[in-house]
Image (tube, rainbow, N blue to C red; front, side):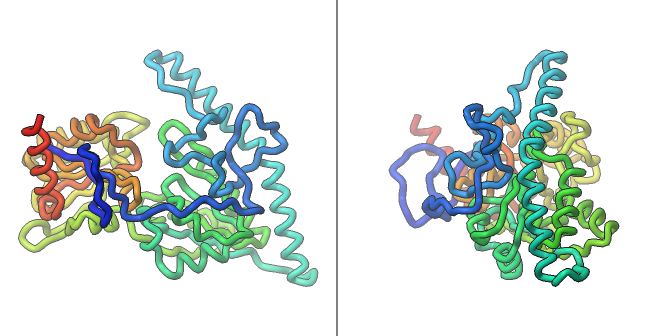
Length: 385
């Protein structure tokens, strides 16, 4: 049995669905602010009005609940079963991304010019050093999990480049005069390549801007923050890293799952579920991870979980090992599936969980106060039918 639920809240729900409506945090009301314009593109909008900068509360902004440019020419095409059609779709998608960036370049160049002029005036015509660059971890989504230092830096930034996993609630903290630029990536669509992100960070730092790179979780845990830091340091730009609560810690705490526990789990291992070149096998060797006395936390592992689970069981991890999959953990949209390892992939598919989903595998999952409760509720639902 498995149950999809959200954590309990003080407000009760009359719904009898197995998906409980109980967000712990509420989004604030929408209030448009001047000076931060929309990233959303529509066919009816002339190119001259397109902007790479977001207006956080605009209904036309990037639709982050769908993780796509909704209604935009940049929206990825639907997957095709035909190999040639899939290749053509990939070519079209890359072309659309380049066209999208071309539309943004004039405004980006204008902002660079404004920042350079501002720096020259501040320096009185003398030599000025580059601006400050911060790699900031925003945690799993709940803005109250941010560090005080992260909040201070976010509020003082000139330009913020943010990823797909940075929540709206975190973006609420951005100063009124700052610019927001979306550089996120999702399966099948990268709004910017990693090399382009490097160049954006470098160009704006050289223009004297205070640049903040916002990343979900911790920037140095499966966030490619190390690559960005290394590139900038090679160009003479100093980078400050502000750590964030990585998804494993934040989401496990939300569920009441101790990642280690005396007599239950003596170690914890963070794994990437990404596959090689889009395949169905995860990157790591499963036999090294099949330790019943360890906790496994899998990032970005939805597509490779069926293969991973089979390999873990093949190498000795009991099929009955407790497991959980958490979609959009710590946010108001959080959904949780509890199941035994042998059933987890099927339950995730049945409940249609989507990215970002974190997977926790290990005996410690059964220590969550929601684990047995979820199975009891699921059993009652079955008995009632």
